[in-house]
Structure formats: C-alpha cells, structure tokens
Length: 185
Ligand code: HQG
Image 1 (cartoon, rainbow, N blue to C red):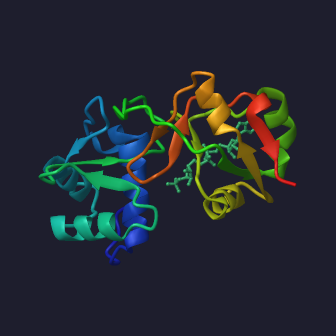
Image 2: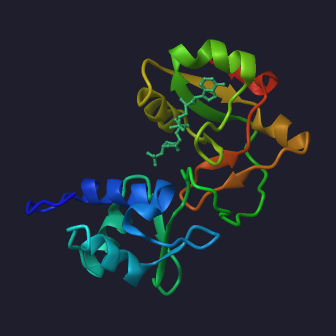
Image 3: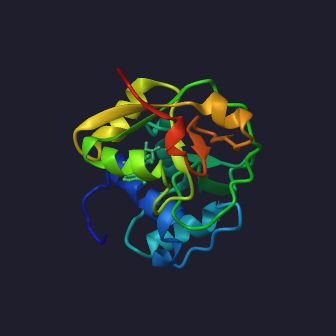
C-alpha cells in the first residue's frame, strides 16, 4: 500500500478493517483478547507501511465511518472493530434480548444451501443480523441478487439461544437453524 497519493477515508477504513478484523499480523500488530489495539502502536505500524495518518485523521475516519465500524475506548488509547472479525477474539458483549424479528440479507444463489443447513458464520465469528430491512438489503447486495430473510429471533431467544448487540448495532449470534428462517412474502 505504498503510494504518495493522499489516501481516501474509505481506503483507510478498508485498511483498518483488514488489520483490526482479519490480519493484524500484516503489520505485526497485537490485538488483545477483546480485539483492542493500542492506538499509538497502530499508527506507528501503519506508518511503517507507508500510510501516514495522524491521530486526528484516525479519529475523523472512525467518527464519520458509514457503519461506525470502529470504536475507541474511553480515553482513546485503544481502538477495535465493533464486529465483523474473522480472527478469534471475544468482544465481551453481554447477551441481550433481540426483537421478535431480525433480518439477514443474502444472495439468492445461497438460498438452497441456507434452507438446508441454516445460516452459518463461515469465516466470521458470528452470523450478522440487522434490525432493519434496508441494511439487510445492502448486505445482501454485496453477494449478488439480494434477498431478505426474516429470522425468528424472539423464538430463538426463548429457546435459549444467545444474541449480542455490537456497539454499532449489528445483532450477532452463533448460527441460525433453518426452522427459524422465513423467506419474505
Ligand atoms: C451466506 C458487513 C450458503 C450469508 C455487513 C452471507 C455485515 C450461507 C455469506 C457483515 C449459509 C457470508 C457480515 C449457508 C450463510 N449456505 N451461504 N448455509 N449461511 N451464508 O460477508 O452477513 O461492511 O461473512 O448469507 O454489513 O454478508 O464489512 O457475512 O451472504 O454486518 O462492516 O454466507 O459484514 O459489514 O458473508 O456480512 P459474510 P454477511 P462490513
């Protein structure tokens, strides 16, 4: 990622996603067990890859990110991705009661498999669900022709299945059995 061109916020955000969610070792960054990186260390290590941003720029990218993907701790000495990890970390979230219905956006090509196996987390740490259909639609569009699935989250919760709400309001659960998935009419 060595370039003399000024980096866009989006590019910086994508790089943060890479090192805070998937591959911290790319810049030899250490995350703690809850996924936090030390801000000073992060800035130093990304500078060593030719990405020169200062704390104010990082704060701007975090504050203006469309999905609020990253969060600082209280004194802004640490930063982490609020969800979306593929590396094993424990966000240390408290289980929460979900709304009766949550939504999952996917691509039509996945439907046969989803109605056979249920929703599985794949490479990520959780299955991601949203409270609104618009978000689900946008998520689904990333994969192909989108389709929104209704997830009977209330019933899952009654059955003892845990749900977590990330800081940026994405609902997370381990998997969704096919019996809790309904296709929209
Ligand atoms: C599908 C983004 C076949 C699943 C979003 C999805 C989200 C199956 C894909 C976050 C399946 C996984 C996560 C099965 C699940 N058979 N396909 N049994 N079970 N799938 O990217 O939910 O922009 O890992 O439907 O906003 O799309 O990165 O998950 O299509 O919150 O911040 O397998 O990523 O956030 O894809 O997206 P992903 P996702 P960011």
